[in-house]
Length: 354
Length: 166
Figure 1 (cartoon, helix red, strand yellow):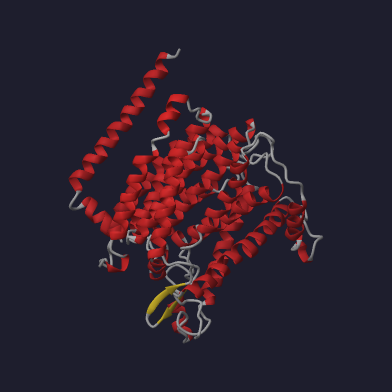
Figure 2: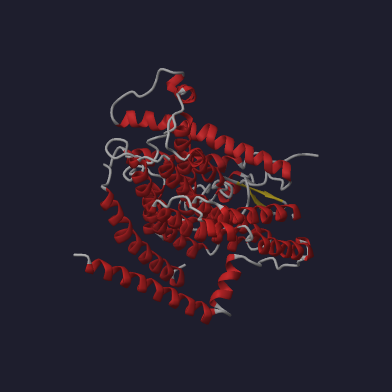
């Protein structure tokens, strides 16, 4: 029995799950933490961690060892079960949300088979719903600590995440109007021949990017952490449990960047109006059908995702943190009306132009 | 497929019992979250992935979050069961056992999933949308008007109490 990455049996599905989650948590999140520190240093004119390993690449390993060997503290009045549950409730949706995200595709016997853990017809909605579960970890972590500041931090963070889910959902809805499907692979294929959706609804892209910054608790909306002046929901967490919250945050960033690339930036396609199949026809190979050529679009997809991830860091050191009321005002009074307007504009474009 | 159904439904029943019997209201709420999760799994098995995903998105992701939010703000203590109620509670499980027996009996009679013939596009976003805005458009619109009325009602009621305060 020859085993392929793209088969639909149980074993190859397990291989896909192991490879994908392993790559995300073990490689991409690891590199992201390293890049965060190095790029931050570069922006501020410092060197950053450069001692452990070549270019400081092993710094994350050293940090991991430090996290594991730190003392585990638990507040004496905390609800022990929920206090332990919260970090898991943060990591689980972060990993689960990646299930329907395709990062490439292959054509086998004329059928398009996406390189993803699961090819769901409701892919976009699945990602939306699973990422919305992450808010439970914030509420539980804050409440179970049984301490004043984490409770307040948890409530603040939960309100922020719930509020920004609305403009994010509405921005995605505009894309779904243009695409007419909720399957992520089909959405990419629709962008392969024509314009990328960022060209059709640029306002939607802007709203989406701002919303994912708030959803993943990144600066300028990092109220949930706020380590410098206001204290966040994970103030009582230490050691590996704290590291799990951070891993979940970075995994969420990766998923959000992937969704941004898939929905707006043409997924693994080369450039707007220039698709890989057109390009490869000139070169004389059929890229999705022969051998390992399908890895080329996957690499291009990774490059686009890295660009969005670098954008996260770039914005972090460019904009100062918002005050909480400014954040809420921006969400409810600016972004939501704007995203509703965006839907109406997109509807008109779909009706008369496309 | 069948073993998945029995896993999901068994766990859903287990956690819904948790909703009723948990002393701590937070545990009750979390049990309900878990129950809804497994129910959405059953929806997926019934060839309705869209409804299953909406179940998580709306009930778990939005409504239950607000429930827990309020519970934690109110800081409800663990339920103190008074003597008379405890006496009554002793016999509460009898009707419950009967109900569970009938549910299991009907489950055994349900045809297996592979037996149900379904259309290729059954339960897809397209089909659900078409039936909501096609054959059931009147009911759909009435439901949305009722929801709008409720929403406006809530806004009016909360405004009133705010005015009386100062």
